[in-house]
Length: 178
Image (tube, rainbow, N blue to C red; front, side, top):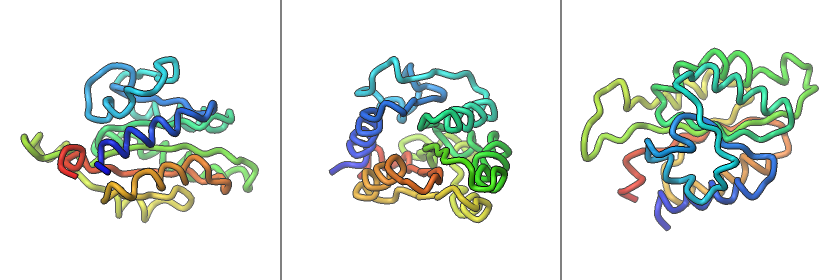
């Protein structure tokens, strides 16, 4: 089992649930390695967005509150940083704000930018997993270090019944290396 193949299999599994919708930059059009993991997903389930990370995370929270299971793609941690207010102060705190009255959950995908074969410079390769995990009270943050970690993590994120959202962190370099 290869890292990329497991990601693609996981996205196709998520797409079998009618509640899922995939949103972000380079979701409906090519542009990142993550785009290629969605090639088996019905194009009508892909919502292409402009570079507006905070808006995207706000839409993610809104879709979750409406009963959907949004799969929100931020190709690199460094881009997701622009949406931290929505992630930490809103999505993560839904149950606190509603006194456990919501069962809304989202799946957020991000990545540690690849450094090989070409280093894109340091504004694209950050790994903020530990820091963000320490800020989240309800969002489960999972770094996908091995191909065998991938499908079980995405399956859990979709099927969980505790109302928690899941943030999954992929390694860009592993798409071609593992």
